[in-house]
Length: 471
Image (cartoon, rainbow, N blue to C red; front, side, top):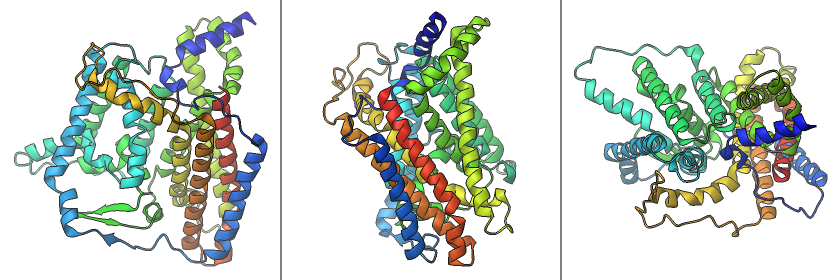
């Protein structure tokens, strides 16, 4: 008993404070039982599936319906001047994050680096991407530096061509980058330490610029740069699209429906869903209870407490990502029973974009409280970014207002986000099935197993929210 209690205390001390803040703020007292809420959510998905089968008989989202905005507005939004300005802002923010991380106070709550990276950047660009398209591409500091260097050296090295990016590599580097970022945020005992984040930023920047020099700036930004790929996938949910120098509007979800699946698309979507699933699970009492003894065993075997916790959490996140992948592969195996002319790998790639709304639902539902509450500290921290007692903007005394919305309201918002995301995923998968299969009935039959996985994901998401609320 003593060993278990000690391990639990060590785990609480070792896990980053930023990770523990990702769940609900407070416990929601729901007016209806949790089991009834879950059954109702599952029923909504089943009814939506039936409605899609009856009312949606031909592909709709695959059609190219692009409505250009006025040329004047497009010229302004895609101008070289605006591109340079946005890129400069992105580079300046990266420099601030690194300098404050290395030379500012190492208290996470008083240094802008942890809050900016984990909240303003990582969470804030998600809704911006969904609403306004791939905005991050304009502010991407790694792309901006790469292009600036390319413009500078082009007259000198006009004959130098980067290596051709291997087709088989696809999105795998981006998936690996996202997994490493999740490990820093959710597993590392020093993941909220400003100097640790700054060091990670420097290492990632150097690796990214080397890859850009080898394969080309735009190619690596679209395929290998983890954050560029991540936010770009969410931007495909947006109605805003940029084609060359023309900005226009398209149907919601059609960006994903018209996406060409490439190698690694399954890996990156599984990482997106699996890491958030692990974050929700690790914030609840079930996980903390289950990991006490393994952590204690490792400590008794001579491992330092910090490394024991990190090892157990690393194994846990890996297992969760693999379990999510296995569940999706099970759905694809069911899809393939309708027509075995396509391989399981091909089908997995074809349907992977349809899971992006689920990744969005998980991220939005799980992190909305962190974004709305901790996000309020961005301006106060910007007034004193290094924690040196400055007040550059006159806002350093600002604090978080927790009273503007209650935990019960939060729970309903999160549950609604989960449901909407899964219904959108059903619609995308149904539309893709109509493209792949000749007959409408065959397309509907192919989605039975996918429906089962969607229901499972929904139940899992709602249970994780309840776990976080209990934690």
